[in-house]
Image (cartoon, rainbow, N blue to C red; front, side, top):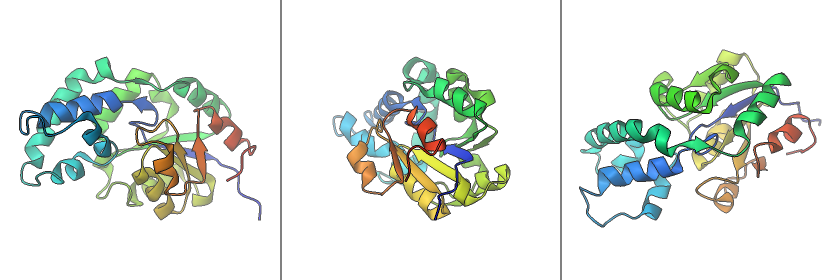
Length: 219
C-alpha cells in the first residue's frame, strides 16, 4: 500500500524548534536550589524537559507545585530572550516548507503567552496557521487531544500528518492520535532515548523534512 503524502506538519516547540534547554534547566534550578540546596544537578533537570510544569513539579511535591510554577514562570519570562535560541536551520526550512504548500502547526504543552514569546523570537509567527497550547485542551501530550484538535482545526486526516518532537510525549502523543511521528536527534534526551518509542522518522537536521515531504525518505 502506498503511503499517503504528507500535507501537514505538527511541531512541538521547546527543544524542537526553539532551543530552550539552557533556559529550562536554569529556571528549574533557580526554583529548586533555594528549597533543596545542593540536591539537584543540571542532569537531574533533563527529565523535566518536555512534560508540563504541573507534572514535573508534582513529582517533587504536589502540594507546592502551584507556587513553584509561579516562580518558574516569573524567572523564565525575564530570561527567555537571553537564553533561548533557534536550532540550526529551523526558520529557513520552515519558510521553504511553507512555500511548498505544506501546512504547519504548533502543538505544545506550553501556555499561549510563552509560545507567542518564542514564536516572536524566532520570527516565524506568520508561518503557522494553527497553534495549540495547554490553554486549549484538558489533557496535554501524550494524550491525543491536542493533536486531534490541531487536525480538526486544519481539516486534515490523520494519514496526511506528521507530528515532530524532541520527547517521548510527542512520539507517544502522535501514536495515540494515529498520526506518523518524527523524533529530532538534537533532543536533550538523545536520539537513542527517542528511538525506544519507535518514531517513523528521525531527523538529524531540520532540512531532513524537505526530503520526507517530497517522499524521498519513507517511514
